[in-house]
Length: 576
Ligand code: ADP
Ligand code: TZD
Ligand code: MG
Image 1 (cartoon, rainbow, N blue to C red):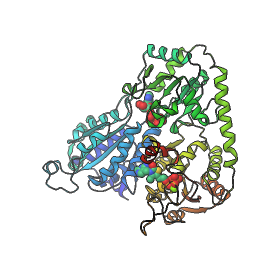
Image 2 (cartoon, rainbow, N blue to C red):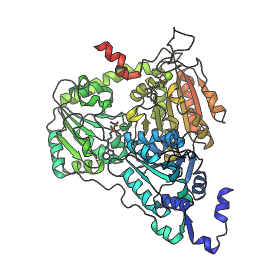
Image 3 (cartoon, protein in one colour):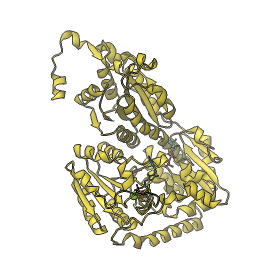
Image 4 (cartoon, protein in one colour):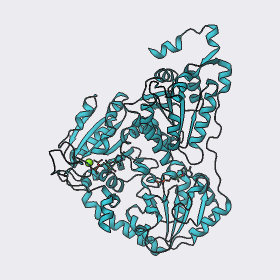
């Protein structure tokens, strides 16, 4: 056994006094509680992975670096510690880089550790094995990028990476580790002393009392208040304070996709099912850990209606203020401190005007009632509503399970239909609407939380990371994947009349994704009706066995681009 060999090697006197780059990096990670690595082995980091595993770090080997990177990024979101991804030079690094950029865009703390080739050769462009100036390439795509050239700097290098990843607005950090570094030897005692245990990596950022008062004054003046909870609020892990604050205001709240569950979707103040009404008709909007980007129509235009609106924004990043519209009351600080400070000085808070609460509640109840019968349909072939009605019940019965979701129709409809009951239980495509996060997220969610995972995947979305079902089986993770198989992207019905090639959005008809997982010893199920789906998902969630369910969905059921068809250039042209 490799680890036994490493541990039991008799240390002769001279050797005992030396350490090397491999061990220093392992010690530095452990010293800072970074106990899990997601990666793909190869030159020059194969031995590093082995030695890290032998030293008690959990090292999960993936089939593609991008998926390992997505795993690390969501590990960062779920734990507030940087998720660590480990890649080989050039191509492996580039595969991981998409995930690093994704982490940065989504404000998730992550560190990409990558081996790199020999500096002297790379810099003279003499054609080294996997030659690439990785540091230069990573820089514009992450929050910070560093290179460590000397073993005695490993401690400082990792400390800088950790601080950069988690302090302020979290994000992705690149740490370049040239091959030679690992073999560098130094005195063990000096090496030990060179390591840094990062103290208070994400210091509390206390908002100014003036900003807190200003925000509360504006909120109190509202006739039609709205609170929007984004994934920054979920990340902050200030769950009790956020809930207490929202409840004290009595205002309707709208959870963004990954902010769902901070307060349950079934909470009386939840306005999720009255989204367009609250966006249009609110007069004061408080954003907590949510940006006014495309997902909120930039805070202006048709979606927000004509009535004048005042925005309050709670965020750790001062530059976020006024990014799209004027923020009349910026509250800059970490969400725990900001919400705590507001709670501390709210005093007796007046309930919002009853007519506003009533408008929102009746709109919500009306929409929920309209949807209800569609969710109970038992149509064959299944439509999205019939299948999602089942999954909604499954999650309701298991509020601790983590829901991973990607696709177009599969994403947009699942977001609206499946209620979430607890914080950080829904993870999805995030700010970029990226396809491919599915299996990486599922693996990290299972590893980091130990909870069962339900992945609701479009058939196209799944294809981006599908090979990781082997990884799920290899590590025996409690993951149930449900593929909404509608034969393609958005719909399976497109026809190409110009040649014998299939249309660009369709896949092989009647594909049996369930057979993929059987190749690796997992359980595959082909489900053609809501009843079959219910039975299969319940069984998988209860057994914890890796399972892939091919849910056969009517190819005609979806619509182009799901809910965001309006963003297609062709739709914009049609409007003109
Ligand atoms: P969503 O997509 O859910 O609307 P965004 O990713 O757009 O959310 O916004 C998240 C925001 O949360 C970012 O502006 C980020 O700076 C902020 N944020 C992240 N963590 C914290 C924190 N601990 N305290 C305050 N703000 C935070
Ligand atoms: N590539 C990447 C990395 N991200 C993307 N978002 C896309 C391509 C474009 N895209 C979407 O925005 S959704 C989607 C693609 C390819 C797939 C939709 O098909 P699906 O879901 O099968 O996953 P539905 O249920 O058929 O709509
Ligand atoms: Mg599809």
